[in-house]
Image (cartoon, rainbow, N blue to C red):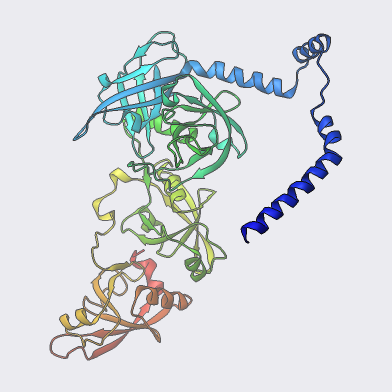
Length: 497
């Protein structure tokens, strides 16, 4: 558009605007700004009505004030100072809440482990709501849940009460309490936005047991370790982290649920450490819709077992690789992190029923949970730097390429799965040996683990499976082939699961 045309267009638009304004503006504008003056009699009447009427907003406001009043005396501000190699002294501020224990008498401050991590007792200061300064007498910490417990001793202490986080629903209202940016006795209000948040990246820490509550109650630096309180004034969570691009509150905060914190606290006070159960499996953290379809599931749910460790509770219970654990102790399993939580926080020695998906149908299994710290060394996961264990066959295999074939005495065009080791207790233990090559399962050639998984899945309904084996050595240049019949029904008898 040329400049002259632009000026004409703007001028014409201005004229039209003035005409419209002259025709319609006076009446509408006068009406929009007109307001009746509020005389003193009306003002007094309204104030009197507001003071006498009990609206739902007033009742809610009074309830929040009562919750803050009963909870605040138990909330503390924590200051710690520690030496960091190469960086000198580092200060950490956080919050905590005073609680009692059913395992030990006295008063304890519950907070986040990262608030007091690697800090000497004398370098930790606990400020009570009335301004008194205390130092903890002892510290217990569990980094895998980011929970710490500090024993304190003083007169006139007030402890909060535990609530049941498992009864919380999305939308329930909560208060977050603590010392954001060092501003002690701060209270914010919000709702439970989500439950069961897992797989969060929490700085440098490795938090194993993640089952966070998500809230939009404002949580900021300094709130770590402070309580999340329900509408009955009870602690339902310990505030831990925020998701933020700015470093401050953006409406996404995370709290450790009280049912987890309370269990960790009692374990620490009773045993000094948190005992965790273990079943002895490796889980597929990349279980997706493609794998679910291969296993004949209608959708992704549960978690797939990729390996069962020998001499483990899972092995003794009959769990197998490619089983999908759908339910654990009457709780539907959402993903692998969910199962880790369910297992590790269950009582050791408990006999638990699991529902697994195997071969297109549900199978019930019973497993007795063991203490991870007391498991024998031979139940650990095999330390394989090379090769993939195939537990159902009792083999460890690796795809054979031209370079490996030439070094091992096979024709360099030979392709298949090279057998690295054989479990002598397996059904194939007396038929196969290291350096054999699985070339085909039935009529299906196999050159990769995906090929093998598909072939085994396709023949899952067969009791006997024919394996075409290539056996090579220096003398015959790898020209010997043989057929081996693998009877899958023997798996249970061998104990190789």
